[in-house]
Length: 188
Image (tube, rainbow, N blue to C red):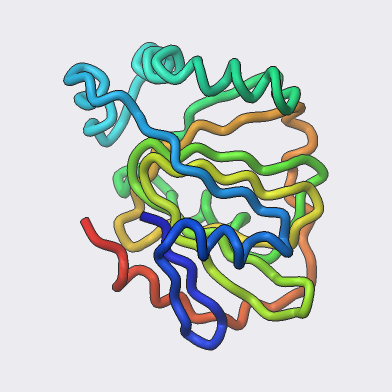
């Protein structure tokens, strides 16, 4: 269940209301279920995956990739698996925790765990969106945003690309003012 927190501390948990609040940013948020097949769920429950297991997961979700190729022109995808036992996880994540933009859309399908996208709104206000398993997000090219993991420091996300070159962060000078309270709100 996604949780949207505005800068004034107001929170929203209904997908329809969150989507309405994200509309001025052209950020798309959707719910995409994953199969409840026991073998697939066993892979999702593992903290780390080898390359073969990652490919199994991607093949299981191929229908979403085919849909995105047809509707939006995506050409490739990969699976990122982050967990607390990754050496230097905090330093790896640091480059995404400050305000930046990308030349291409940032598209993620969270299949396990959770993460937080922060956004700078057209009026200069800020908000943070905690996304969890079975949630798909498309952050349009040029959107000023940041990303960090929740306190659980665990996420499995399929990343979709038109080109990987457009995904390099271009940093802005905007300071993050919002104090994330979503870690205490997230269940599970």
